[in-house]
Amino acid sequence: MRKLYVVTYDISSPRRWRHVYRIMKGFGQHIQLSVFRCDLTEAARIQLEAAVREKIDEVEDQVL
Image (cartoon, rainbow, N blue to C red; front, top):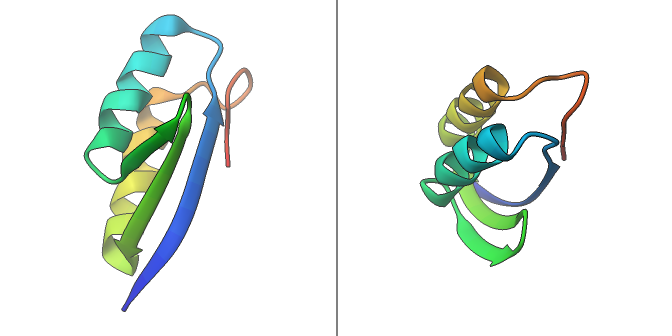
């Protein structure tokens, strides 16, 4: 079963922002700067979360 997610992020480093942007393009539709619409299965959601967590600084950055 697929679910629709809206993912937004605020990344303080331009380098990390580019990494997260590239990851997100593989999982969803770019709606607006730092906003993606993602229609994901549970497995794809877990993969997305893991990929993003590897690239962000959890103290400085925010992903919702």
